[in-house]
Image (cartoon, rainbow, N blue to C red):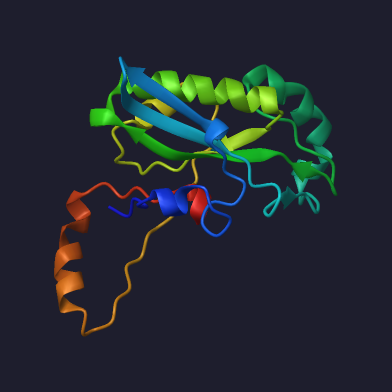
Length: 177
């Protein structure tokens, strides 16, 4: 549900995937067959996160937080005016949601992001996604959101097709939101 569909015509284009390159992909193979993939998509050329300031105690306690954070596997809080360096874990596909394949892809991505100097990466998985439990082994922050479906009244066929939404696992691509 809501998975993007990529074609050769849209995968590596400025219009749909600016900055994404073939070398950004990590691929899992079983012999010559691709059984999984994930990409580190660096979008800093057109999307950044810059700290404008901290409210309340966060600003006062930033020094202590920055001393503790690396020991817990979390990034430091940058000074106001600085950029937080991050990338997106995108184009995730794992045959049969195999946890071993996902675990290997996630570890490779984690190491690649560390080498690139990312403070963190963004991976969007629904609460009901079968691979979500693997992520809990990494320092992470849950980001709760809701998906809303809007359609014209005369789209009865579309509305009927999406009635099964509650039974399917939504899987939007966080990198394109």
